[in-house]
Length: 119
Image (cartoon, rainbow, N blue to C red; front, side, top):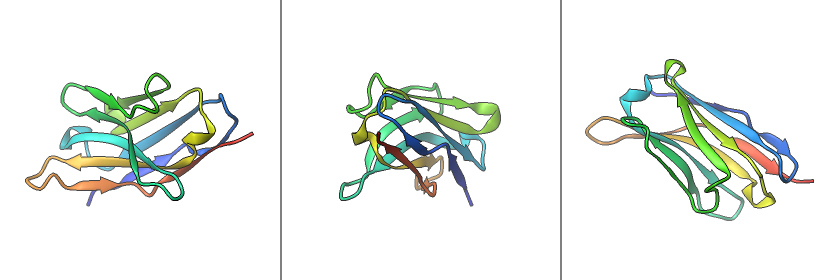
């Protein structure tokens, strides 16, 4: 069973920064990709950022481009999301996601971490 453990959420003022962490229970290269999604109240879950395990290519949702950066620390099986210039509309529960390298491309989710941007 794969486990994804998130940390780093909290309350921050507009314009501030936060860094989220997602620690996987397996080696990162067991996954095709890892990433972050978010879901605000009353809205659908949306892609924030993903990183492809082989090669490290990244992709971002339009609303976070230029403000958020996804990265990884392979030795720690951990993916990070650095969030800068935070806006109130970034308020959401952020979920870590991983797509396993099996025949079904099994998808795993973390438990979610709350990010609130408010003055």
